Image (cartoon, rainbow, N blue to C red; front, top):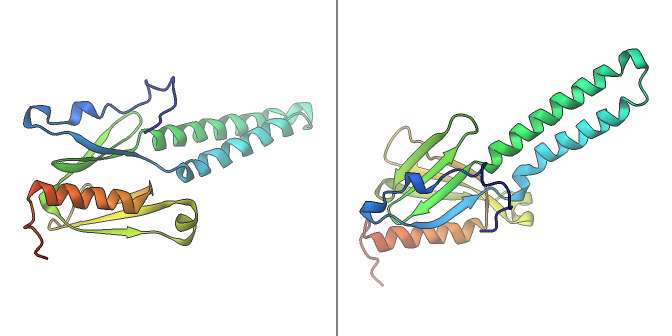
Length: 175
């Protein structure tokens, strides 16, 4: 996976969640598709427009679009960081999701609990190359249920199916 340089401080530390002494290894680490960044980008563009608008506003009121631009830009940066720090990880033992900016959440599902994976690809997802995963398990409540904006979703679904098959969690298919 190609990652921007200089953002190591913003990277979630996936390695600390691995059970290395049990032989757990990462099969795939999934960051969001670029489409997930569209909303923050649009907010940033609107913030720039408000900033430019403040140049034409009366002097006594110029602070209002400046303040709105600053708040909007801060919100866009917060959303961007939230999307950037949201990772879905497939290992040889489980799938898990790490997300959060100031506080971090970890949701885990062992491969043995995965009953079904639904891959949804809306029209714009098919055109742009992303989809959404929905995991079904035997549990009523689970931490990993919906994973949105996954690039190359069919390849990733096959990767999960291969890992489940190789782990021996489910019996071998007879031909």
